[in-house]
Amino acid sequence: MVELGVNIDHVATLRQARRTYEPDPVRVAIVCENGGADSITVHLREDRRHIQDRDLRLLRETVAVRLNLEMACEDEMIRIARSVRPDQVTLVPEKRQEVTTEGGLDVAGRIDVVRRCVEQLLEVGIDVSLFVDPESAQIDASAATGAGAIELHTGAYAAANHRERPAKFAALELAGARAIASGLALHAGHGLNYHNVLPVARLDGMHELNIGHAIVSRAIYTGMEQAVREMKRLITS
Ligand code: PXP
Image (cartoon, rainbow, N blue to C red; front, side, top):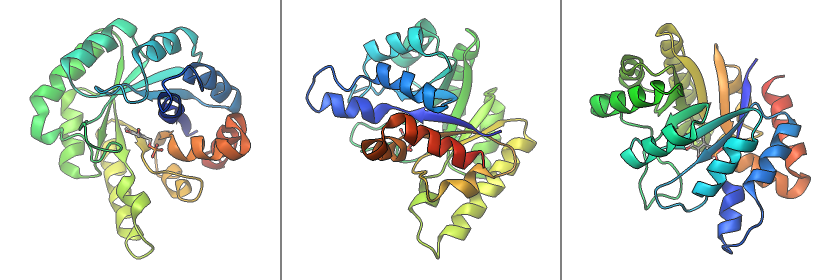
């Protein structure tokens, strides 16, 4: 069954807009669990624009499902991850100026650096997933790092218009099959919403979807527990 990782970064984005104490992502994580989230995902960015170190520490103490930390392949982040010990780290590229994570991690171009990060995380028992574009070279390089999973970047699929979408989806299908054949667990995320998620959820071997913006947006209308429940029902239908 496909698992749902709920990314709660944007709860912290709202809090940071006023530099106050609410809404608190730690409280929201509990509500997500009540709605059926299989994991809670947060991205600790170098500029701390949303999730703060305090959130990560408290989430580690309070989250009952799996905690997935998205982070850059950087020494400071590796130190934090090895100290906090999330269940999983998803390595992502990070640029200060971007609104959100723009492309996948260039594993093929930086394989030695990525392998070293993967090793340091595996060494302390943290599962590692690599966020990559749906390209053969990136899948093959990911398998060679020792990581156990890849998360396919679904941003191009999500942003495509009707004419472009079949080709973007075919790329996800091909990359997903290659990942599974290489023994990697298959995850996907970015830009997925209630309208475009189903074909991705039904890809052969899909194990985990990480979804944030659409769920937090719907929560404004319906409440978080309901928004999570609807997404969980959809991806497991
Ligand atoms: N997966 C990764 C690796 C991401 O960086 C993000 C965005 O933080 C997501 C999933 C969730 O994307 P969205 O907020 O568009 O659902």
